[in-house]
Length: 202
Image (cartoon, rainbow, N blue to C red):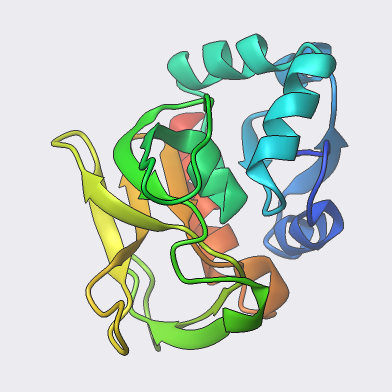
C-alpha cells in the first residue's frame, strides 16, 4: 500500500512518518505523473491559498480533481480539509477555488488566529478507544454538510461547541485538526484501512 503526501507546502514529513508507522509506504508527491503510482493521498496542513497556487504552477490541480472524482482515497487535515470542500464560506477567509469532493461548506480560520490555537479531546466516529487528542492551529470548521457527507466528530467545549471537525464522504476523509502532531496514529490507521478496503483488502 503506497500513499502519497502532497508536498507543495505544509507539514509533509509529519504525515509521512505517521503513515509509515501505520503500516503504509509513504512518499512526498509533487507531480501529476506520480498520482498513478499511489493507492491513496494525504493533503497536509499548511496554507490553503499557497497550496492551491502551487498546485496550478506545478500543473497538478486538475489531475488532483480527476483523481478525487475517480475514487482515489484522500485524507485532508486542516488546510487539506479546506481543499476537499466543495464550498468555502465567504464570511470567513474566502478562497477562490478548491479541489473539492466532499459535499460540505467550510469556514477558514474559523477558530481564530495562530495565537488562538488549542487542543481538545474529540470523539471521532469509527475510532475506537479514548477520544482523539485534537490539535487545532488556525483551523477551519465545517459550517454544514450535504446529504452525501457524514459528520464524524465535533468539538464539545467553548463557544464553538457543536462545530463539525471531522467528515467522511465515501473514499474521502477530512479533519480540522492535526493528528500527525500528536503521536496518536488512529486517524492515519483509519485512513490506511479506507485505502486497503478501496483496493480490495480485508
